[in-house]
Length: 258
Image (cartoon, rainbow, N blue to C red; front, side, top):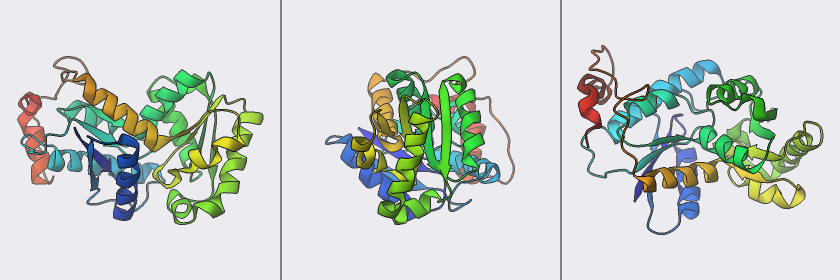
């Protein structure tokens, strides 16, 4: 089985770090390739950057999966917490697309009644609440708490960030009533395992949730929807897009026949 880990920001070292961590989580028999956004923000931390990242994610889907990719990916793992472009990717992709925030929130909802989220970047607080509403889990969110550090800064020195992240997670539990806490974002990979012994609720690493969900979706082998809101769109003319994305849009439903 081969999975595509799609990073819609432009920080290639972060992609490499996630691919390495994801491969450890996936185990033998599963290959994971990484793809990094070809344009956009180095780190997604605003609505504007997220909107651009959605385009970058579609661009990567077209170039890396497309219609005739010989690598024959079984699923796409959108490795950006906040899942820019997730629903459009699901609509256009011929294979399952799983989002990092989608997978984390879904698993968290199975493990606890009230969910806390710890992430990097204050602007993500309302954005993640909005996303939870988009997938029907708004009422399950106890709190979204963010450090002033960006995910990139946390990844650069996780030991220095650990105390601050622990304090935020503890506040989610003690003050907000969270029964499970997600450490969300590429920069926080590994922090859930590091801090689990210090808190008495499940701590989830968003990348681990993503990998597990993508593998499960691939193994189910479900067919691409031919009807409904995630059915392939009709042939769509375009201007100024990358050739691969323009071709995928122009192909319409035929692109999903694999």
